[in-house]
Image 1 (cartoon, one colour):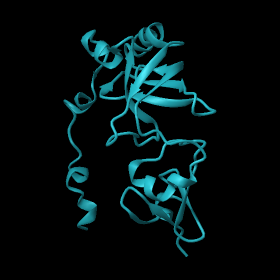
Image 2 (cartoon, helix red, strand yellow):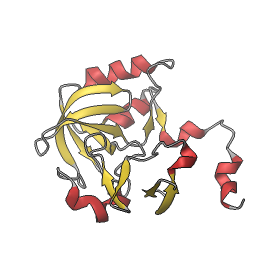
Image 3 (spheres, rainbow, N blue to C red):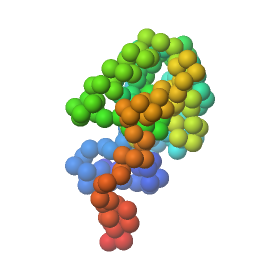
Image 4 (cartoon, rainbow, N blue to C red):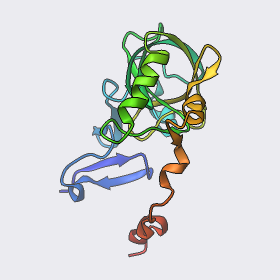
Length: 184
């Protein structure tokens, strides 16, 4: 018998045996098709999950902009913050930028700039209600420190590129672009 899970990305059932038994999303099944969400590893619900899982959340789901303290800078585009309405720290990815990874050239330089700028500081996070959570479950937002957009500052200094620029110069995967698997 196949092991199925509710696949919220396609709003259908997914046979996880074709994935070697690995569940691609932070959801599992309970008593049929009711999804269970791992709120410890993935505190934020995607917009598509809000209708079904909002009232199961053990903490307030963030749908509006808020002020918080930066606890740690993870890398050039991800920070860990503390907010008075939650009893745990959680990750936020800076919206609209793409920073080099720590193992890539200038990755540590970008992180160090962000550490000097905002770590331990109070910031404002502006939430786009239509684009709140990324595929890794991190909250997305524009980071404002002392009235300045930190992402835009990093772009003007040449430390990061725009999020859309990350695809420039790459050869597109034609199978993915036209979703060949759907037609086979």
